[in-house]
Length: 339
Image (cartoon, rainbow, N blue to C red; front, side):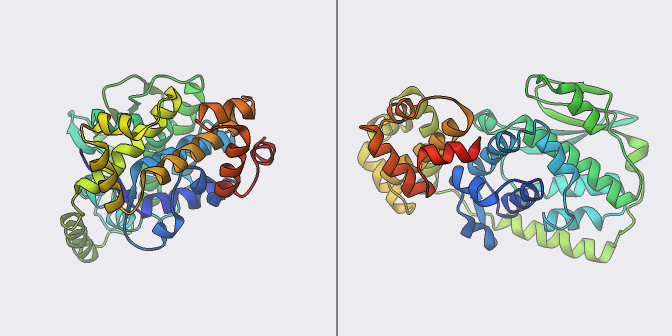
């Protein structure tokens, strides 16, 4: 099992940006099971919870371009070390290369490389197959918009990519997305996400270049990567359960035995590993149920009784009690507020 965690800076930045766009950050965090107390101190959080924010925010704000809007509206400094590494570099090309080299100080989901194609240079991001379900067009378009916005702020000039490619299929709103990103050539269904720049643009000098500070920051970033916590069996079990539960709830087959079988361990071993990770099977099931319930109430017209049955509750009353404990309101009140 590979590590799927990101720095707390990432969800902190995202929730801050979404609040500026009109979303309720506390509600979003609650709906995806993200513990806000974890974001107040340096540390690492589940990447799955963070990526789930994109889908929830798109629906809550009714904004198919929310990824691009967050990227273009990024406040310098919200990504801490990454932003500082960028702005202290000498040229735009160096800024991109340095931040990619130290990307692991922010996220361990996939990786990125720069490919020199003569007059063009392509930034390619790779997502492992077991992480592909966590990616979305919103998070990918945020990455492109972030690069464009940072380039403009760092150089004082508009730098438009030559082309952009996304792994996801083309949405109905692909033309507005291309217009928002300012690119003429945009492709979908690609093997990887790509942003291609003209090499001449990458030679543009950074206005705030500071070689002394840059050297200090790069040493710090390298040290931070080296101290990234290793994944133990307990953490791996917890992350696997959190990936499996939404699919199992959708299929209507949620049980400890089924989860343990999926992970190729005994039910007793799985329970022990979850306890060692500071949680329980019941806690994780309840959190997954609450997240799916909120999604179905906010994004569908499914009757409450049907939602209760789909989530495996014995009756509607049990569902209402559990939902109120988690969200502080009844399912009916929640649906009314979300409409």
